[in-house]
Image (cartoon, rainbow, N blue to C red):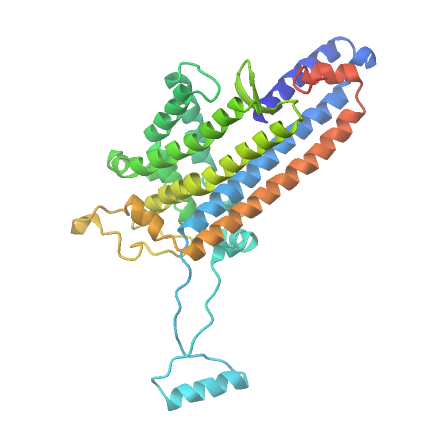
Length: 375
């Protein structure tokens, strides 16, 4: 999809240039500058909307859901002016040893709306995009390193995957700093001072390497199976996830098999690896940083401070084991809602783009899309 979007924008800009040079003639399959501006504007709006949803909910909120612990059950006297509360208080006075169960509050990340409200109340209007600057720096550095280490290779080849894993390992402290920025209260420290040093790299690198390797495995295996079963067709720029024109039952079953494999790998490998990495990073949150959501810094006593001879972080296996089933369900709900929002956005923009393209002459469609859509 990203390759098709890049191709559309590039060809669209070229078409606008040619149309302006010819005086805006709309005949002979040309597109007017206004029509092309609408299409390009829609494409950019789509990209911005998808990125906003993925970053705010798929990354920031999901990270908070991974870190947040359910509120522990506790007992306390009830102070109330209503009759029922007075009766309870009288019972407590008559029996001081009695415990009254207070309703356990729901986790902040149990709903997307409550999470965003909490962030804005504690960190301001732009808090749903907290850590964005650091993320963009990480993405830019990662792209450069991948290009260098892969020697310009494209497509889902093993060389590029190894380059991506190596690049993310090299940038482990940036990813660690991003997690700390997301899960902590606003800090007056400049961004560069929040990036940990080499000692922290040694601690977080195994978790980042695990997550990066899991991500590549979950991408390469379905891509390889898809090419073997002819679900995907090769392109000059590598393997593009474009469905073949084969509509036979065999092709449908092959596509279903690739989809099932991709979903299974995501649930069994990628999500646990990502959860492990985030929780290891959270266990390394500096003492002077206050968490923006409640969580146990000791992770049930698994983390021993370095000052008393401990490692100062949680182990990989313990990071996953201490992630309770209720927290796992809450995270899956967050990811499910994000997936639904992305699908709804794709459908909406498909309808908008379809309506815009429907009024264009066929020659213009071929000029914009080329052979990508078979027109």
